[in-house]
Length: 399
Image (cartoon, rainbow, N blue to C red; front, side):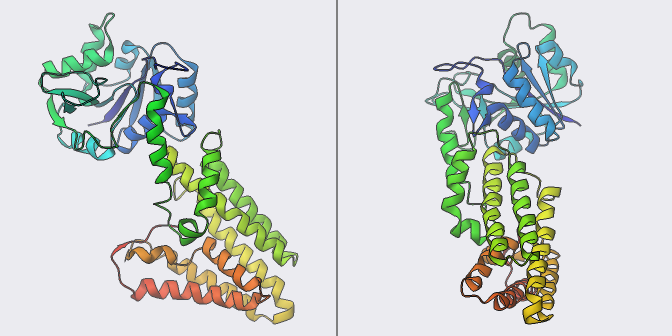
């Protein structure tokens, strides 16, 4: 059975600025885009956004989502929305300006029946619609396409979101209480200020997922500062990844010309861009896919830069520099092949290009470039053998 999503996006926001609730800003994007990604993560194959007409801010948001590969359309009213689904489809309904945690949505979908997510009627917020004397609707429901079609046929001037809720209750939809009604995952935004806490939490937690020690510990202040500037701009994570790739490529060119310090500094300048890209993607829930071509190019380009450095050192130190570089690359490739093994949380200290660049800086500072190449080879080999023989208690994250 196909799962589609229906997002209401026609209520006006209150307070300064006005506009639509769905167009309220979150980290330089709209609340609608975060709702759409919530639906996508829940398994929705298609997403229908219901609006009055075709507001420009929603058209722009949907264009961005479509460019990322989401199957999303804008329906100018209930009748268009009803035409976009089949009667037998399951329909995940997301209320205007509403966000909840992915876990609650998964629990609701697991019921395999029409169902409503609820909060207690005693809940301090009156922005949630009352269902009965004991509960209010938390803004998330699962119904079938046929109910939407029947509701749209008799809607007239009534509000689609509220009418669909009433029809679901009348037809016996089950009610499931939100796991933590007072927790941070529930949001019903009526104005821009309602999103301030959400944005602050996202910003604070943006580094907790970082998969390498450089971003987690060394560059964290710089990356957070960059994130604060980037989050309110149109810059995308993909553009930051491209900047990282460009600097890495330039570092390889500089190394090949014998400009060792220029090459190393160019490489190191690119590392915060990768960290900011990861954090910004997490903040906006729009990360470049980990197996995307942009991210996949980083390792080969880093390997080319390492070979260029070894080639530049060859005339004065012999062919052993090339052996060290090739050995390092071979161990890194082998390490990549071990992804999926169970590892401890210390896996963030495994060898990867970003951390290896900063390790090389320690040797370059004292003029020990060849010793640095040796240290990188030992680091890569040690990481590989640690994965092979070391303790395993968590997943090795892809760098």
